[in-house]
Every structure is written in structure tokens, then in C-alpha cells.
Image 1: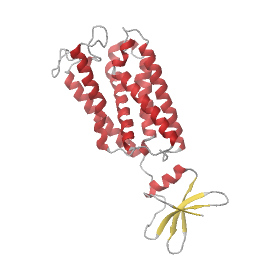
Image 2 (image 1 turned 180 degrees about the vertical axis):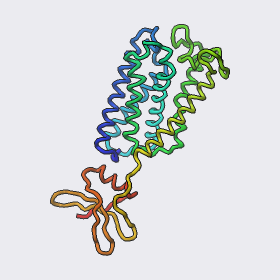
Image 3 (image 1 turned 180 degrees about the horizontal axis):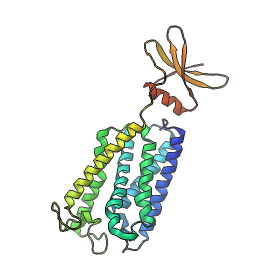
Image 4 (image 1 turned 135 degrees about the horizontal axis):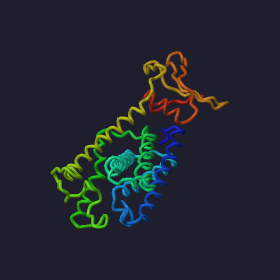
Length: 289
């Protein structure tokens, strides 16, 4: 994570703290709410909302520690971060556009605002803050379907077993009610309007789409700028000229024949050096004093 600029790194630290604090407070408030409230009481941990909030909070805590250690992070970890971000996006979108309209004026209480709005927004912004280091292939967007698929299986088992997600209700959300008028593959003129299988399929397609969109936007957001100075590997080699007296470091190219140095940029931080490498697709740069 050393390739992240200091400004991005500080922003990422703050966003991670917001995620962890908001997810914790929102979960605690939900757990201590009345069992008659939406996702209230000790059964709150049976819902995807709380599970995804806990997951993204853990991911942010781990990410905070990894970023502070300033050591390379595996590609698998970045995929986990990506999957957690898409999962919490689903939490926010489903609540805001599907569930909240059915809950009336009590939909946006403190705990719901924290777990369904603040946490998703902060997590999404944090993903883009560190996206310069991820290098996730777009085909990995398919991994975003894993958490909801596992939850759909979990909720299906709960429905068959008769688990009580709320008093007298054996399903967590109305669109996961296999016994609704629409059933599994049918359609109805009342909620949920289409069968549970269709809802699951629609949400999975949405997740693949939003995951792919995130990866495309991350690539665009981190696309290197056009090189300000042309570089000819045949006649030049990259070099960092470092002053022994002042410590000033300047990156540029030195002519292999006459030694002429062409300055490109002043290096103030390690991030500047990484930017120079990325700009010209370089791996190693010789330092001359």
C-alpha cells in the first residue's frame, strides 16, 4: 500500500474509522431496540444488513493495520475488500429503494441511517481511495455474488426450519418469503410482485453489474496521466539524481551517449517516485549522487 499518496492514505484512515464506529454503534442500537422494531432485538444478527456491517468493519480494521504496516498486500486481500464493499452496497441499495418505502416514517432512525447509509457510503469511498493498489481483474466481479448467495441459502434453511426472524415471520425480508403469493417462480399483483427465485436472480445480476462498474471506475480513477516528457529506452535510461548536500531528489532520463539529463519531476515523497514509475511503466530506477 506504499503507492498510495499521503493525502489518500489519511482519507482512507478516516473513512475506515467512520465505517467501524458507525457499524458498531448501529449494530448495538439495533440489538438493544425493541424486538418489534425492524431488525431489532437479539435476532438482529440474523439479517444480512448486520452481517455485512460486521464484515466490512472487520475488513476495515484489518485494512487499517495492513496500511499502517506499510508492507505489500496480497491480491486475494484486495478481492476480499472488493467483495465486502459490493456486499455493503447491496445493503444500502436494497434498504433505500426496496425496504425503506415499506417501513414508513420510522425507516430512517439512527441505527438504520448508520448501517444502511453512512457505512455503505464510507466503505465505497474507502474502496476507491485504495483502488490504486488493488489491480483486481474485472472477471473477479463474479466473486461479489458469494455473500448474498450464502445468505440466500441461510435464509432458505431458516424458512424451511421455521426460524423466527421476527415474531411469527420465518423470513428476513419480504422478497425472501418463499411462501408469498408469487412463490418461487411466479408473479403477483401484490408484494413481493415476483417469486423469490426471480428476486435472487435480479439481485445477483445487479451485484455483478455494480461490481464490474466499480472495477471500471477504479481503473479510470487511477489511470496514469499522459507522460509529460517522452522517453526513449534505446537512447536513455531512467535515473534519480539525489543531492548529497540538500537531499533533493529529481527523477528524469539520462542520455546513454552524452550523459545529458532530462528532468521530469521533483520527488518529495515515496508516492512521487511510485507515480514516476507508473507513468513510464518502470520497475527499477538507478540513483545517482
